[in-house]
Image (cartoon, rainbow, N blue to C red; front, side, top):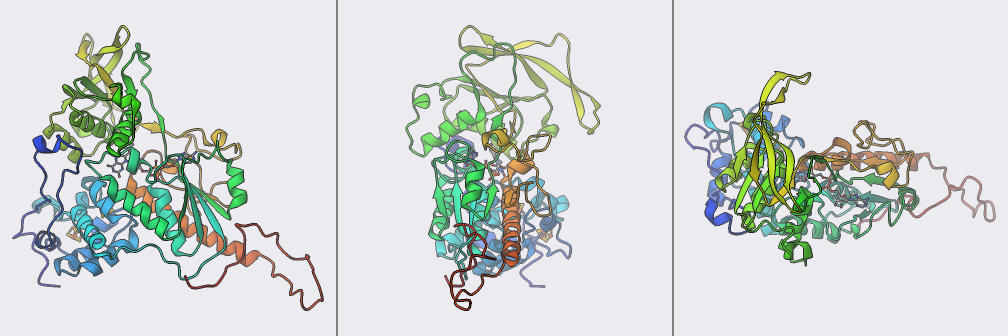
Length: 506
Ligand code: FAD
Ligand code: SF4
Ligand code: SF4
């Protein structure tokens, strides 16, 4: 064991410096600074190099955390980066936005007595340094293949799959209905959690590595799924989930009651320098308004914190359960509280009030009753507790469901689950349609970036096996020079996406 490790008794946990709430709410920049090398090395040295590392087990990518912590503690950052990037296509992004308190850090064995190793911040530090030093390189295939793969969706699931497939030499085309690459990383998650340049440089890297992007291209409108199947040897569906859940309460048609993604997309577009008429007109701008956000997940946290930064007069988050039962990351709740958000726990909306535009929400108090079949306490309304909460803007952040993909894609045969997510075989990751795979939120339902990356990597490996099997099954073309002329017998019809491996060094 290196002497430089096991320092958790003498060195206290220290996160990178967090900007003061008053300062950070004045802009949309990330709230944490990066470590400097001495801090990163010192914090990495707190790791006790467990024989059975629970941090690694609970990381969805099973990142080799103890090894890259050891390398960092010893100042061997390039090796740390090699280890970290071997299992993760975007470590600097996961390091910033994974809910570490529920994943790696929440399971660090020193967490109980001494506070966990700051795994996420160190992961970010390693890869930000790698970018600065030029160690992050585009995918370079050792062998080009003629087979092409079409990916629908340029979110983290599609991006991770594209990188892995490109490394294997496939010709990769990503189709996305947005005008930018990144999915929710670019238009959902606000830049105070993840600055846009961090996502854009990943997109540029893929382009440099030969991945082709067809943006403003909506499958279902610009091509059917079948058309993509005809173009490519395999297709991956990584379209995420976007159908917003609604609270169909009385007064729902009033003005200034909007969905979370409408609000966040407008804010992100504004930050990216786009013209956003609904923002400029004030309709999607929280400035000077009393804002009420409904919901208790990560999306709700992003909405309340965005509203604060836009200059709202007051921001309240209404949630029908209590802090302990909130699905959002505790760290995000803490940031929001520091930034002046008021949490109204155990409260549910009953109606939207107003004549033309919303002026308030009628809400009722909730108590948590007996546990239901899942073990969660059932919310019960407290009689006579109705009261009005002032609101000039109500943002609904109640979760997302999948769109009806079979109809949207013009492919009624595509199998979906009872929740509307795309059904796959969990070993092969293939749908019921031959050569069509799926990954990310469209399979899991609304989840996390790290799970989308994991799914994208798994799908890429499955697509590779599938295409290799297909090639092995193809009949060998007869040598026409030996039988004196053309002979189509035994030849498989060749489409642009279904040709043989071309051995060449890239
Ligand atoms: P997405 O990122 O949704 O990407 C799907 C892409 O498919 C999009 O670009 C979309 O335009 C495209 N697409 C959809 N339909 C079509 C079509 N028909 N044709 C062409 N293209 C199409 N996770 C975390 O880990 N940490 C967080 O802090 C966090 N915060 C979040 C905050 C918000 C506001 C939201 C909404 C989610 C957050 N998440 C967070 C969840 C995370 O963003 C998602 O789990 C993740 O992005 C899913 O990746 P994906 O690739 O499956 O889908
Ligand atoms: Fe932790 Fe996420 Fe990094 Fe895994 S990817 S080590 S869960 S921060
Ligand atoms: Fe190190 Fe904590 Fe992981 Fe153990 S659980 S290897 S102490 S980071």
